[in-house]
Each structure stands twice: as structure tokens, then as C-alpha cells.
Image (cartoon, rainbow, N blue to C red; front, top):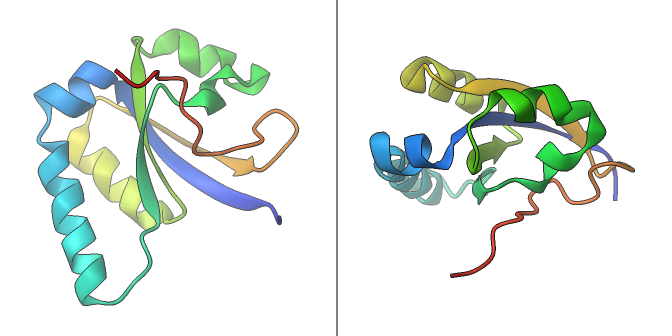
Length: 111
């Protein structure tokens, strides 16, 4: 599997899933992609595992836990979300790597 760059918007799970109407945004985006016959390139990941990588220690420390992330291979989508949501952290990483074997892994347990 080759390296891929992933972009993310990160915030507390409460902020992303309760205080912001992010579900509507993602539904609309999904509908648009289906109409365009475009492959989905974004994922909502509760408690993203990439935050456990040593290089993310500072970012994890700044973000209220439990966190949630929207991860995408489309940097423009993440930039747009950042402008829309304001109180979020954005960044990027390459995966799979030694410290991030699965870019979309979640530490959340199914409830």
C-alpha cells in the first residue's frame, strides 16, 4: 500500500457532533458525490487513533477529549470545513506509516 496524505479537522467530539450541524454537511456532501459518481474521500472518525502517534502528542494535548476528526484525502474540503467551523485544529499526515498504520482507525468502542 502506498503512502497517502490525509488532511484532518479535529475538535472535541461534543463540538463536532452536537454543537455543529456537521451531520447535515456530511449528508449533503455524500449526496453530491453520489450525483457526480465521485468516490467518497472523507470520513468521520470518533477518537481517531492517529492522535496516539508520538508526533501528535502536542495536538492531542490541546484538543478536548474525547476527540473526533473528519479525515479526507481532499485538502480543499478540509480547508472549507475549517472556515465553516472555526474552533477546530487542522493538519495533515502521511499514512500508512510506522506510527500510523491505519489512517482511519478509531479508538472508540462500539456502544
